[in-house]
Image (cartoon, rainbow, N blue to C red; front, side, top):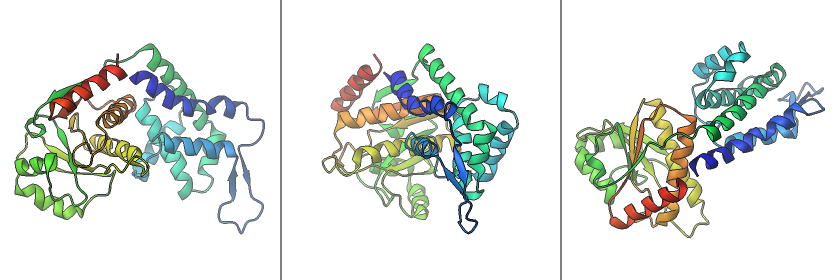
Length: 307
């Protein structure tokens, strides 16, 4: 199930490949009116592709433009090298090209003309096939116990917006880490729902603590599922930036925030699985539950999604 879920998400992007290859008209036009701020107008096909890339988390909103442009330049000068690029590199390239268009007018148009976008989509198509043919073993663990005692690179804290401690997992982590954690958290000036911030682990066995603020369940019509998925995506993104190899997650938002446990488990496992296919630096991901009920629900969802 993990593999089919990931392939489904890649399908949404790869579906544009035959359309772009068979497009009978120019994919962009240059406006004759020089007074216009943006001289390029893109075919709706390109606008739809860009929107899909954002929706499927292939385009990151925060990135280092200069260092990522260096990567893009290397691959732009050697299209053959794209044929062996992994998913993390392709996401880096797509982010640079799409967001770079805002800084350098016509940048995306030149990538279309130069064939880079087509080459990336062709590589994505090959990766999709490889994912179907070679299903990797999921290095996902489920344990019942105290997350503060785990010897992993990073543990995730289900925090509140203040980041200054609270009840449940949040309070337990602050107590175990010591007062230095609170002092560092004060400097972070809080955290928005769905976002994530990282601190040192201090007295914990874990080197890092990634703090994320899950959504409060209000019936399901306040973007709760989207925001919970965002929590996992942002936590996982921080593992790449900070060279984290092993990470442990609690059942975010399922305590006093009342998020339905089975739905939360499905979101967590699907987001972790998809991230694993795009990024190869993680060696182990652990879900940590405290109650018997939570453990059994996570075990059932894991079995359902990965029979």
